[in-house]
Length: 122
Image (cartoon, rainbow, N blue to C red; front, side):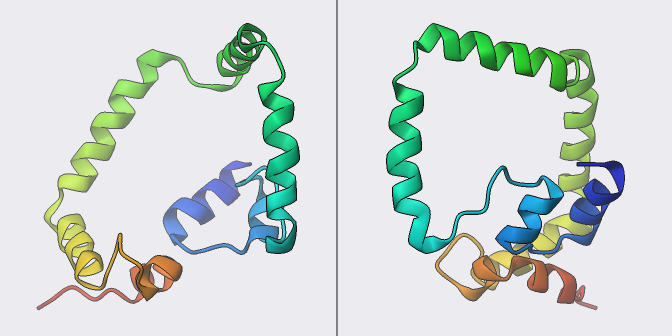
């Protein structure tokens, strides 16, 4: 995914339908509900049938050529934790929890809408 789409996702904080998420590269594949079980029942055993070491080596190779160096992670994590600790972020999070975040509630199904309509208390 390119910079523009990454910013749209991160700054826009919106929900995406599966087909759009797939086009954006946000998810590998969008599978219709009716096909999900058969996809998993076919794909999971296929992966499980390969040697663990071969899978580990492949994942390590992909990580080495696609992930930032470890030295870049600490400053980014520090920036994330500083952002999450901001009073404004804490207030927004608490409002989302009061609305039912992390429960079987509408806020979980339409988080992007709830984030966008949040208004700080005066």
